[in-house]
Length: 193
Length: 193
Length: 193
Image 1 (cartoon, rainbow over the protein chains, first blue to last red):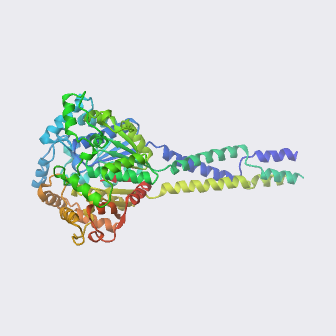
Image 2: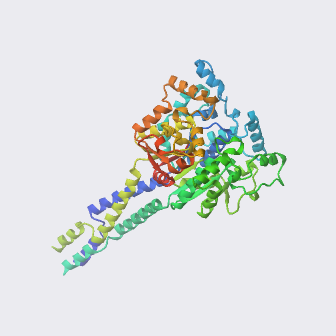
Image 3: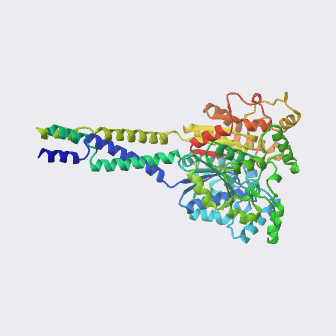
């Protein structure tokens, strides 16, 4: 009879202390595993306004988004031009007006980092890409919006380059270095392009 | 006698439910620890064909490989030239022939990003590096092959730049954005150079 | 009575084997959680000596340090100029003297990657940033020192560019590719600028 009783004991679940430790371990391991299962994030800091570098940036961003990665692109300094939809002079000081006049009017005005040849480089690459059925910069930017790539314009760079919110495409976000680094630190891959 | 029996019970391994939970935890923790122990990976997206940037890229790649890291280099756009072993015009259209003629014939024809001076910059740096006993680009590329650095040429960029497989060195791989991002997301460090 | 004894058994802590496995699991899970709690690290490989790229590099570095991230900056090739405090010709060979004369004398001599216009670009940007109350490169470098950003000069690049320790600011470290990759592999974000 006590034999049976003792068998019952041996089949009892873990005592309270062991049970608590097991629960704690299971919770922690689940949290660690969960952190690893998060979709990998790609953060691109777009700095350059070279047509070819921006092509590479958007090809990587769109490819990553299509693979299910979270993708954020931060546009700073020269790359802000890729987000321009119009040029506004009104309300700017003389130095800012000069700067605005010197900056390209939008992504369709950008040339490659080599062979630019007074604008011929852009036409050359556009012809080449059309022939090869590779999407051009305009289409890649449009596609990135459809794929829900997060687009953030750097506010400090907007100050320095005298670019205003009214000049940029709609539906984008604005942020600073902290926004960018926060995203990057939680992602798997960060590129400065 | 039953005292002994009960002692036996208390020395028995955990009951079936506790045993199952312990096994599950041990398996999960081992998997998490294993994932952390993997050798860190370095992924380099080589975009530029500046001699100095390619020097930096191969110095980092070879250094990492020597340290036991997994190293992959993806060559896209201008950097494809670093993999060229010969130039082929045959079978290309007129625009592609022009492009091929404009692209440098191979890594030995690349100049630095500054002080290029119609090709003098390259000779200047080569002299400087020989004097300082630093390996030149040619030797660094050869060394990367010996160190089993994985070399991948971007197929989309090959299309755009009209570079064919026959023009590139042997023993390399071909892939797209997905190949590159997959590698990068599983590695520790990714650089866009 | 033996019923009581058996109850005692059931309230006993886990048997020795279970106890050992629990302890092992707890230690491993604590180590894994600890590794995740480490402050994220930012590693910047500064390659360029464009004023605007260095501005971006130091803005990111200082922002990250202010957020509590560990920050290391490795200066290689052209970017070494950002660390120069004086120019020394003595004791250098003729080729090295030429190189030293060609390199900018320090960060205050660097121009932007675009609109450089024989030095006017630098004055233009400095005026613009003063007007917009954005810190200039000189102040950003000083701030990075106050924020304990780790500054490392690449020794191989110093060899190639004929830059000596005596020419660089004090309180910095010297290292090679391994130092840089070690830091990068343990950090969350690495940028090649």
